[in-house]
Image: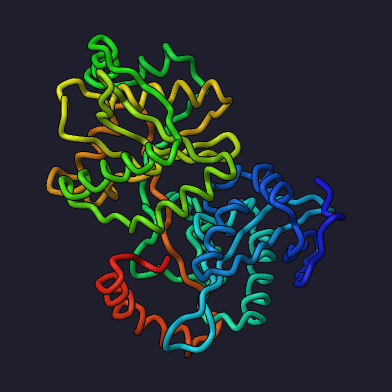
Length: 369
């Protein structure tokens, strides 16, 4: 794909590769490049995600890696001014997306990232790429570049992935027998799956989320953040809200985000009514069928416990038991990695942030990431 239509502000070149910052790329251009890079990108690397995060204080910085004029890698970094420490943090949520098995390409890209970080007065570069823990050679290159494991992961480190390319019959056969039975139970009892993206439906879903959060004990971001985020995704035709409905009553809901050939189980919620109809199972299956009809081939169910915590004592074990029934495979990523660019200020922020994070969450009932 040609890059002659965009301007650049920072360039780093090796014998084969060039890292460039793109400032005037349109939404269509950026998303097209991201879809075409190895792995196909992530919704949190999309143009519209950066546009949304700008409204709450993060500045998107979009970088591409080229080989012979063709874009082969991309990363959207979000810059945020750190309180108490001069400068900013540059965070690449679920990225970057690079040809990770090519050492020279990776090193050229991050040499360019350092240049941009210094220009932006960033003390720390934070990435959360979808590199698997088993990719030891790639991890070694990142360590050599200077990346260190952050104290916690901002996105879920371990997920359940489902390949949607097989036929419906093959997908059903790959499920656990109890899951397969449950996906059919609701339909036999008159449960219907409907898509409803209206504001009224979103409010109903939010109420359902509050109930689920109280029942299952998970953290939920505030109403205003969620609705602004959802609206940004709806405006870009990337959000879809589905419900399991029985006799006019919404029993469960799922909000999914789509990008390219992928979709993500972003949020799920249910009421305490008619749980014997197993509406969440039918809901998952029908949305999988819908995704196949849209040409989507990759489903990320997102959160399950990390392997070291995989036991019935873990608060997320119920999610694992539910999601594992659909026949996916577990993927454990490397998690959150930090690259100190200005060592003294990076160390200062590393000491301050845990206190600031807890205070922010307690006072605002939210997180700033």
